[in-house]
Amino acid sequence: MRLDAIAALFAAATLAAAVAAPVDRAAAQDYPSHSVTLIVPFPPGGGVDLIGRLVGQQLSAALGQQVIVENRGGAGGMIGTRDIAHAAPDGYTLGVVLTGMSLSPNADYDVNKDFSPIGIIASTPVLIVANPSFPAKSLTDIIAVAKQQPGKLSIGTPPSPTINYFAIKMFNLMAGVDTTIVTYRGTAPLTTDVMGNHVPLGFDTIPAAISQIQAHQLRAIAVTGPKRSAALPDVPTAAESGLPGFEAVQYYGLIAPAGVPRPIVDRVNKELRAMLADDAFKKRLIEAGDDPAPSSPEDYAANIRREEAKWAALIKKLGLKLE
Image (cartoon, rainbow, N blue to C red; front, side, top):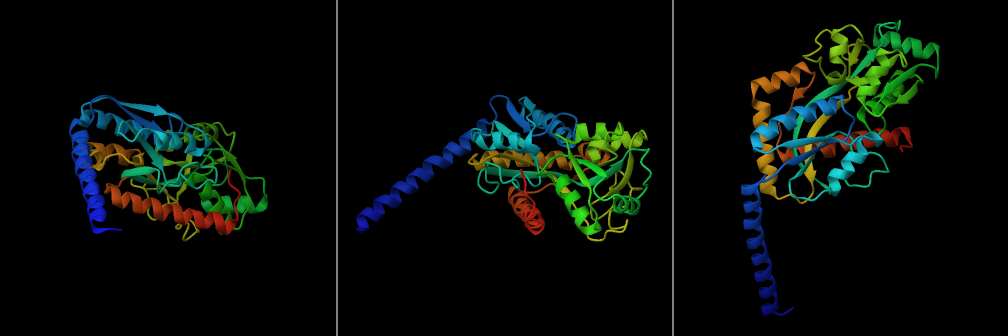
Protein backbone atom coordinates (compact mmCIF):
# COMPACT_ATOMS: atom_id res chain seq x y z
CA MET A 1 0.00 0.00 0.00
CA ARG A 2 1.33 3.45 -0.92
CA LEU A 3 2.42 5.76 1.89
CA ASP A 4 -0.07 8.43 0.86
CA ALA A 5 -2.89 5.86 1.03
CA ILE A 6 -1.78 4.77 4.50
CA ALA A 7 -1.63 8.37 5.62
CA ALA A 8 -5.13 8.96 4.30
CA LEU A 9 -6.48 5.95 6.19
CA PHE A 10 -4.76 7.08 9.39
CA ALA A 11 -6.17 10.58 9.00
CA ALA A 12 -9.67 9.18 8.47
CA ALA A 13 -9.42 6.99 11.56
CA THR A 14 -8.12 9.88 13.62
CA LEU A 15 -10.96 12.10 12.42
CA ALA A 16 -13.55 9.41 13.24
CA ALA A 17 -12.16 9.02 16.77
CA ALA A 18 -12.08 12.79 17.24
CA VAL A 19 -15.70 13.05 16.13
CA ALA A 20 -16.83 10.10 18.29
CA ALA A 21 -15.19 11.36 21.48
CA PRO A 22 -17.11 14.66 21.62
CA VAL A 23 -20.33 12.76 20.78
CA ASP A 24 -19.71 10.40 23.69
CA ARG A 25 -18.88 13.29 26.02
CA ALA A 26 -21.98 15.19 24.91
CA ALA A 27 -24.12 12.10 25.46
CA ALA A 28 -22.80 11.80 29.00
CA GLN A 29 -23.31 15.49 29.72
CA ASP A 30 -26.94 15.35 28.58
CA TYR A 31 -27.56 11.94 30.17
CA PRO A 32 -30.19 11.21 31.19
CA SER A 33 -32.67 13.49 29.44
CA HIS A 34 -35.63 11.19 30.09
CA SER A 35 -36.59 8.12 32.12
CA VAL A 36 -34.36 5.05 32.33
CA THR A 37 -35.60 1.43 32.29
CA LEU A 38 -34.01 -0.93 34.79
CA ILE A 39 -34.72 -4.56 33.85
CA VAL A 40 -34.89 -7.17 36.62
CA PRO A 41 -34.83 -10.61 34.93
CA PHE A 42 -36.75 -12.31 37.75
CA PRO A 43 -40.30 -12.09 39.17
CA PRO A 44 -41.28 -9.54 41.85
CA GLY A 45 -40.61 -10.30 45.49
CA GLY A 46 -37.28 -12.11 45.24
CA GLY A 47 -33.75 -11.08 46.11
CA VAL A 48 -32.91 -9.64 42.68
CA ASP A 49 -36.14 -7.65 42.68
CA LEU A 50 -35.33 -6.19 46.10
CA ILE A 51 -31.86 -5.13 44.95
CA GLY A 52 -33.24 -3.73 41.71
CA ARG A 53 -35.83 -1.59 43.47
CA LEU A 54 -33.34 -0.26 46.02
CA VAL A 55 -30.89 0.66 43.26
CA GLY A 56 -33.63 2.05 41.03
CA GLN A 57 -34.90 4.34 43.77
CA GLN A 58 -31.42 5.67 44.53
CA LEU A 59 -30.50 6.10 40.86
CA SER A 60 -33.69 8.08 40.24
CA ALA A 61 -32.60 10.60 42.86
CA ALA A 62 -28.96 10.65 41.71
CA LEU A 63 -29.67 10.99 37.98
CA GLY A 64 -32.60 13.38 38.29
CA GLN A 65 -34.82 11.20 36.08
CA GLN A 66 -37.25 8.42 36.89
CA VAL A 67 -35.76 4.93 36.82
CA ILE A 68 -38.56 2.50 35.97
CA VAL A 69 -38.03 -1.05 37.28
CA GLU A 70 -39.46 -3.73 34.98
CA ASN A 71 -39.62 -7.40 35.99
CA ARG A 72 -39.07 -9.66 32.99
CA GLY A 73 -38.76 -13.10 34.56
CA GLY A 74 -38.47 -16.50 32.95
CA ALA A 75 -35.93 -19.13 31.90
CA GLY A 76 -33.74 -18.64 34.96
CA GLY A 77 -33.23 -14.96 34.16
CA MET A 78 -32.31 -15.49 30.50
CA ILE A 79 -35.35 -13.72 29.04
CA GLY A 80 -34.77 -10.42 30.81
CA THR A 81 -31.01 -10.67 30.37
CA ARG A 82 -31.48 -11.18 26.63
CA ASP A 83 -33.68 -8.08 26.53
CA ILE A 84 -30.86 -6.08 28.12
CA ALA A 85 -28.36 -7.40 25.56
CA HIS A 86 -30.63 -6.49 22.64
CA ALA A 87 -31.58 -3.01 23.86
CA ALA A 88 -30.25 0.18 22.29
CA PRO A 89 -26.78 1.03 23.67
CA ASP A 90 -27.75 4.51 24.76
CA GLY A 91 -27.76 4.12 28.55
CA TYR A 92 -31.55 4.20 28.81
CA THR A 93 -31.81 0.45 29.42
CA LEU A 94 -29.89 -0.98 32.36
CA GLY A 95 -30.23 -4.29 34.18
CA VAL A 96 -29.59 -5.94 37.52
CA VAL A 97 -28.28 -9.46 36.93
CA LEU A 98 -26.79 -12.40 38.77
CA THR A 99 -23.71 -14.57 38.49
CA GLY A 100 -24.10 -17.35 35.93
CA MET A 101 -26.20 -15.38 33.48
CA SER A 102 -24.87 -17.18 30.38
CA LEU A 103 -24.21 -20.72 31.58
CA SER A 104 -27.17 -22.27 29.77
CA PRO A 105 -26.45 -23.44 26.20
CA ASN A 106 -29.72 -21.76 25.19
CA ALA A 107 -28.50 -18.29 26.18
CA ASP A 108 -28.57 -16.31 22.92
CA TYR A 109 -26.07 -13.74 24.12
CA ASP A 110 -22.37 -13.72 24.94
CA VAL A 111 -21.71 -12.51 28.47
CA ASN A 112 -18.27 -11.21 27.52
CA LYS A 113 -19.32 -9.42 24.34
CA ASP A 114 -22.94 -8.32 24.59
CA PHE A 115 -22.86 -6.26 27.79
CA SER A 116 -21.17 -3.24 29.29
CA PRO A 117 -20.46 -4.14 32.94
CA ILE A 118 -21.07 -1.10 35.16
CA GLY A 119 -20.33 -2.42 38.64
CA ILE A 120 -20.99 -5.01 41.31
CA ILE A 121 -23.75 -4.03 43.71
CA ALA A 122 -23.53 -6.71 46.39
CA SER A 123 -22.86 -10.36 47.10
CA THR A 124 -24.85 -12.90 49.07
CA PRO A 125 -24.42 -16.62 49.78
CA VAL A 126 -27.00 -19.21 48.95
CA LEU A 127 -29.18 -19.82 52.01
CA ILE A 128 -30.39 -23.33 52.81
CA VAL A 129 -33.81 -23.12 54.45
CA ALA A 130 -36.34 -25.64 55.70
CA ASN A 131 -39.97 -25.70 56.62
CA PRO A 132 -40.17 -25.58 60.46
CA SER A 133 -41.85 -29.01 60.49
CA PHE A 134 -38.92 -30.64 58.68
CA PRO A 135 -37.13 -32.86 61.23
CA ALA A 136 -33.56 -32.04 60.14
CA LYS A 137 -32.02 -29.17 62.10
CA SER A 138 -28.56 -29.07 60.49
CA LEU A 139 -26.82 -29.77 57.21
CA THR A 140 -25.49 -33.00 58.70
CA ASP A 141 -29.08 -34.04 59.49
CA ILE A 142 -30.16 -33.24 55.92
CA ILE A 143 -27.37 -35.38 54.50
CA ALA A 144 -28.43 -38.25 56.78
CA VAL A 145 -32.06 -37.97 55.63
CA ALA A 146 -31.00 -37.85 51.97
CA LYS A 147 -28.88 -40.98 52.38
CA GLN A 148 -31.73 -42.82 54.07
CA GLN A 149 -34.10 -41.90 51.21
CA PRO A 150 -32.09 -41.81 47.96
CA GLY A 151 -33.81 -39.74 45.30
CA LYS A 152 -36.81 -38.92 47.50
CA LEU A 153 -35.75 -35.76 49.32
CA SER A 154 -36.99 -32.74 47.35
CA ILE A 155 -35.09 -29.45 47.35
CA GLY A 156 -36.50 -26.31 45.75
CA THR A 157 -34.45 -23.77 43.80
CA PRO A 158 -34.73 -21.14 41.09
CA PRO A 159 -34.05 -22.85 37.76
CA SER A 160 -30.84 -23.39 35.86
CA PRO A 161 -28.65 -21.44 35.19
CA THR A 162 -28.86 -19.85 38.64
CA ILE A 163 -26.13 -20.42 41.21
CA ASN A 164 -28.78 -21.82 43.58
CA TYR A 165 -29.44 -24.64 41.12
CA PHE A 166 -25.76 -25.36 40.63
CA ALA A 167 -25.25 -25.26 44.41
CA ILE A 168 -27.63 -28.21 44.81
CA LYS A 169 -25.68 -30.12 42.20
CA MET A 170 -22.48 -29.33 44.07
CA PHE A 171 -24.12 -30.34 47.35
CA ASN A 172 -25.17 -33.71 45.92
CA LEU A 173 -21.64 -34.29 44.63
CA MET A 174 -19.79 -33.29 47.80
CA ALA A 175 -22.23 -34.94 50.23
CA GLY A 176 -22.56 -38.10 48.15
CA VAL A 177 -26.35 -37.94 48.04
CA ASP A 178 -29.13 -38.09 45.45
CA THR A 179 -31.92 -35.52 45.81
CA THR A 180 -34.81 -34.40 43.63
CA ILE A 181 -34.53 -30.83 42.38
CA VAL A 182 -37.76 -28.84 42.13
CA THR A 183 -37.40 -25.60 40.16
CA TYR A 184 -39.29 -22.32 40.56
CA ARG A 185 -39.40 -19.16 38.47
CA GLY A 186 -37.66 -17.22 41.24
CA THR A 187 -36.91 -17.05 44.94
CA ALA A 188 -40.28 -15.49 45.84
CA PRO A 189 -42.40 -18.50 44.78
CA LEU A 190 -39.73 -20.85 46.16
CA THR A 191 -39.88 -19.17 49.58
CA THR A 192 -43.67 -19.35 49.56
CA ASP A 193 -43.66 -23.07 48.79
CA VAL A 194 -41.12 -23.92 51.49
CA MET A 195 -43.25 -21.97 53.98
CA GLY A 196 -46.31 -23.92 52.80
CA ASN A 197 -44.37 -27.21 53.05
CA HIS A 198 -45.00 -28.01 49.39
CA VAL A 199 -41.26 -28.63 49.28
CA PRO A 200 -39.43 -29.23 52.58
CA LEU A 201 -36.10 -27.58 51.69
CA GLY A 202 -34.95 -24.70 49.55
CA PHE A 203 -31.66 -23.34 48.27
CA ASP A 204 -32.85 -19.77 48.64
CA THR A 205 -31.35 -16.31 49.12
CA ILE A 206 -31.15 -14.30 52.33
CA PRO A 207 -32.98 -11.24 50.95
CA ALA A 208 -35.94 -13.38 49.86
CA ALA A 209 -36.22 -15.37 53.10
CA ILE A 210 -34.89 -13.27 55.98
CA SER A 211 -38.22 -11.79 57.08
CA GLN A 212 -39.84 -15.25 57.14
CA ILE A 213 -36.90 -16.59 59.15
CA GLN A 214 -37.28 -13.77 61.66
CA ALA A 215 -41.02 -14.56 61.87
CA HIS A 216 -40.18 -18.27 62.49
CA GLN A 217 -42.01 -19.30 59.32
CA LEU A 218 -38.78 -20.75 57.93
CA ARG A 219 -35.74 -22.34 59.56
CA ALA A 220 -32.30 -21.29 58.35
CA ILE A 221 -29.98 -24.30 58.09
CA ALA A 222 -26.72 -22.93 56.63
CA VAL A 223 -25.19 -20.31 54.35
CA THR A 224 -22.79 -21.23 51.56
CA GLY A 225 -20.41 -18.29 51.87
CA PRO A 226 -16.84 -18.29 53.18
CA LYS A 227 -18.06 -16.66 56.40
CA ARG A 228 -21.30 -16.18 58.32
CA SER A 229 -23.73 -13.53 57.19
CA ALA A 230 -23.91 -10.34 59.25
CA ALA A 231 -27.68 -10.48 58.81
CA LEU A 232 -27.89 -14.05 60.19
CA PRO A 233 -24.89 -14.38 62.53
CA ASP A 234 -26.28 -17.47 64.28
CA VAL A 235 -26.55 -19.45 61.05
CA PRO A 236 -23.42 -21.56 60.39
CA THR A 237 -21.62 -21.82 57.09
CA ALA A 238 -21.76 -25.05 55.13
CA ALA A 239 -18.07 -25.57 55.96
CA GLU A 240 -18.84 -25.30 59.67
CA SER A 241 -21.66 -27.79 59.15
CA GLY A 242 -19.51 -30.58 57.79
CA LEU A 243 -18.93 -29.69 54.13
CA PRO A 244 -15.59 -27.86 53.94
CA GLY A 245 -15.01 -26.21 50.59
CA PHE A 246 -18.70 -25.98 49.78
CA GLU A 247 -19.09 -22.34 48.70
CA ALA A 248 -21.62 -20.72 46.39
CA VAL A 249 -21.77 -16.94 46.42
CA GLN A 250 -24.16 -14.92 44.30
CA TYR A 251 -23.12 -11.55 42.89
CA TYR A 252 -25.63 -8.86 41.95
CA GLY A 253 -24.36 -6.50 39.28
CA LEU A 254 -25.49 -3.55 37.20
CA ILE A 255 -25.01 -3.86 33.44
CA ALA A 256 -25.95 -2.15 30.18
CA PRO A 257 -25.92 -3.32 26.57
CA ALA A 258 -22.54 -3.46 24.84
CA GLY A 259 -21.57 -0.24 23.13
CA VAL A 260 -22.91 2.21 25.69
CA PRO A 261 -20.60 5.27 25.61
CA ARG A 262 -17.92 4.94 28.26
CA PRO A 263 -18.72 8.34 29.82
CA ILE A 264 -22.25 7.09 30.54
CA VAL A 265 -20.88 3.85 32.05
CA ASP A 266 -18.55 5.93 34.23
CA ARG A 267 -21.38 8.26 35.27
CA VAL A 268 -23.64 5.41 36.38
CA ASN A 269 -20.72 3.62 38.08
CA LYS A 270 -19.92 6.82 39.97
CA GLU A 271 -23.51 7.07 41.23
CA LEU A 272 -23.57 3.36 42.11
CA ARG A 273 -20.37 3.64 44.15
CA ALA A 274 -21.70 6.73 45.89
CA MET A 275 -24.84 4.92 47.00
CA LEU A 276 -22.81 1.93 48.19
CA ALA A 277 -20.69 4.31 50.28
CA ASP A 278 -23.78 5.78 51.93
CA ASP A 279 -24.20 4.41 55.46
CA ALA A 280 -28.00 4.32 55.28
CA PHE A 281 -27.99 2.45 51.96
CA LYS A 282 -25.33 0.01 53.16
CA LYS A 283 -27.39 -0.65 56.29
CA ARG A 284 -30.44 -1.51 54.18
CA LEU A 285 -28.42 -3.95 52.10
CA ILE A 286 -26.82 -5.61 55.12
CA GLU A 287 -30.15 -5.91 56.94
CA ALA A 288 -31.53 -7.62 53.85
CA GLY A 289 -28.66 -10.11 53.92
CA ASP A 290 -26.39 -8.64 51.25
CA ASP A 291 -22.77 -7.52 51.48
CA PRO A 292 -22.10 -4.26 49.59
CA ALA A 293 -19.36 -4.81 47.00
CA PRO A 294 -18.49 -1.62 45.09
CA SER A 295 -16.26 -2.09 42.06
CA SER A 296 -15.02 -0.52 38.87
CA PRO A 297 -16.45 -1.67 35.51
CA GLU A 298 -13.16 -3.54 34.91
CA ASP A 299 -13.34 -5.31 38.27
CA TYR A 300 -16.90 -6.39 37.53
CA ALA A 301 -15.93 -7.68 34.09
CA ALA A 302 -13.17 -9.77 35.70
CA ASN A 303 -15.64 -11.08 38.32
CA ILE A 304 -18.03 -12.17 35.57
CA ARG A 305 -15.28 -14.05 33.73
CA ARG A 306 -14.04 -15.72 36.93
CA GLU A 307 -17.44 -16.83 38.21
CA GLU A 308 -18.71 -18.00 34.82
CA ALA A 309 -15.54 -20.10 34.40
CA LYS A 310 -15.91 -21.60 37.89
CA TRP A 311 -19.46 -22.79 37.35
CA ALA A 312 -18.85 -23.83 33.74
CA ALA A 313 -16.13 -26.15 35.07
CA LEU A 314 -18.64 -27.74 37.47
CA ILE A 315 -21.14 -28.19 34.64
CA LYS A 316 -18.48 -29.93 32.56
CA LYS A 317 -17.31 -32.09 35.46
CA LEU A 318 -20.82 -33.31 36.23
CA GLY A 319 -21.80 -33.58 32.57
CA LEU A 320 -24.91 -31.54 33.25
CA LYS A 321 -27.42 -31.20 30.43
CA LEU A 322 -28.80 -27.72 30.91
CA GLU A 323 -31.90 -26.35 29.24
